[in-house]
Image (cartoon, rainbow, N blue to C red; front, side):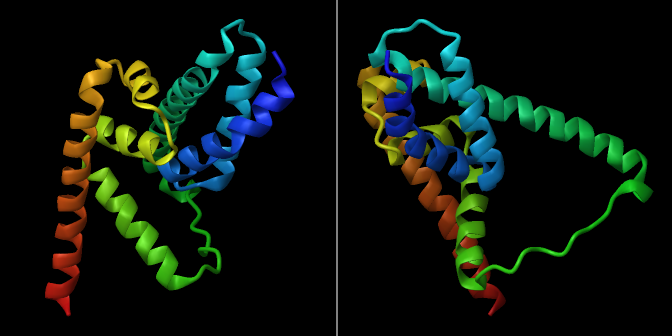
Length: 165
């Protein structure tokens, strides 16, 4: 298996997926690279590499979230250790839109979020079905429902913003 070619072909998609999922490009890069490092230790057919990488990456994201939750609990118990850094200079309008989309994604079930992000990355229904653990025939329906839930969650956010104006 040509790992260099696989990396150059699959890394951009994996990074985009993780960046959308996490909202942190540095963390997304770290997890994408760790996923590829773990791939080096595996012997799997090349046609199964992409779903395997995304599954490993999602598991690494979950592990990182659990560690972060533990760290937050520790910091809350020792608030004097918490330091607040000023946010980086970002373009306000784009940051607001990204925040709104992320907030809407957070309001839908995790499986719906995963389905939509995988679809956005161009996964085939068979690949999505393998990663999510459902029948390939049900993926289209599940994505349609997830999209409807996302649209409703996003609309609720916009309506709340309009009522404040």
